[in-house]
Length: 346
Image (cartoon, rainbow, N blue to C red):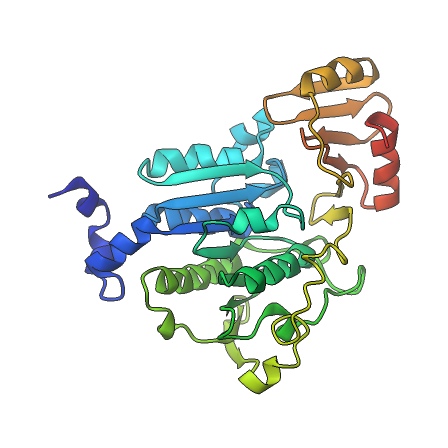
């Protein structure tokens, strides 16, 4: 038997995919936005299924607290201080060498989101914040490329396909993100791994339907699952008439894509940390930074990032070549910006 056919034999036998569908999967390109609990499960499913090209984008590095639920990482990734996208790509290359995995260690913002969408057939939501999800929604509507929204908290999760011109979009569901401090996060409610498995399974099934040409079989609904209560609901949203009044898919507003509603700092879920992003992307020399910062604390450097633990403080600063920094030891953006300014510069 052809080794290629042997690898995917059980998948090809399934009537929803078949030989033709497998060929389509091999020709498809998918962007996975975020490589945390959702993203690692999504990208592993895509790579094992033989999707031809996967672009994996994440701004963060592997932390010990990730290992409870982020399935591609291990303790060695933590010890090496690897960015999540790089650590995931290393594992995925050993799972299926036939798939092209493009790891990008960067933040998704209004200045690069359209470039990240370019050449993709589908975008999958592996994010942990609503701000970037609204940005994906704007970019999807602008480009016509579908995306599949998902979110999980505690034992509850939800997912919804967004197919421009055909289904409701994220702003049909939620007009704007909740104000800070008004909704639970994984810091306050926690999260368990089974809900992530349930929601990513639903995302992947809809992804396969779209990629093999069976998008007409997708239900245009918001699916809500609670694995602790063993409950499952579907909500149908946004008739064609209702979508006309939606700010994004009806009225054409692109508030996040224009950068009008994008913050320059963001609290990282469950990490006691804040990300700081400069107003413009930079090109920093990690070698020069290591030399300059060595006198003020302990410095760990690899090809992708630099980590500083300033002497006499409880902060840990992780710097990336584009000028971004993750300030660990505070959830206050004002404090984080102050620490950034003190050690990195304004």
